Image (cartoon, rainbow, N blue to C red; front, side, top):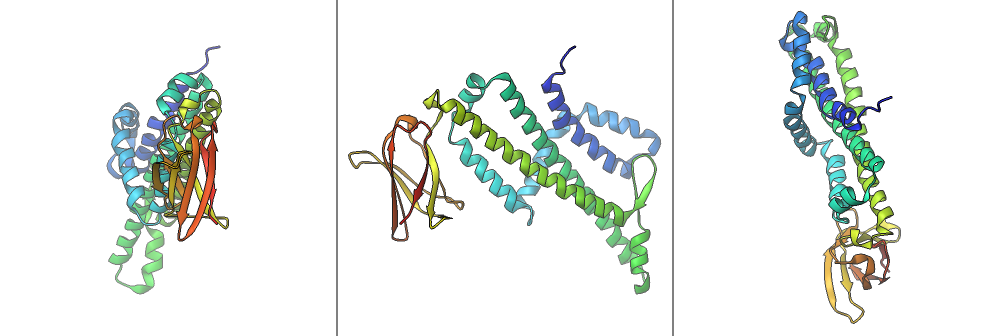
Length: 288
């Protein structure tokens, strides 16, 4: 029995399915029912070409729209912070085995699928809201407002239709579900990279490209704290400030075999953590 290629499966999820979903949602706006097969065929054939601009547009919208940008920017900040910890080319191409790489490919594919699909669902829902508002605005009598909103129909692929209000409710629920699945899959991808890197760091301390961690005070993360890496002789080697989530990142060569101590300061409070050949250079500094 021939095992299906994980790359083919991942490509189908990442590139083809989202574009087909977009075609199914929006083709009734510009195509006759009897010609829908050509729309789906074109969507499947050109999915690789359409994927990049559509995914880029989804990224832009999610980074800028109020209500969506906060969790997305928080996720992206975490991904950027985590990416600075490791030599990812060395990890991915020299350390990970086939199953681990396949898992990362598939997780990335699912994250992209949910990001692009949720974007289509958002656009579809907003389009239906626009249709209802337009119909209500054109209605001259206040008594007919609710009735007018209810009788607006949304044409679906296949030639059938449903009330636009039902389409709005279903679209909003599916959008929110898919959007949160995107955040979950993308977060899982970042966490899995870190978990794999920590696993191989034990055998190859050179994978780590610095020191990182958190600054805390009374069980709360501290933003804006100054963190310094100081040699055993008292020489300042590098420093940085914690971000909005209380995280710090210091670029230190051979961090897994470094010796010295980390010093954190904030608002008159100070904390010190000793460092001595710790294979995993991840630290939490407590301010006192």
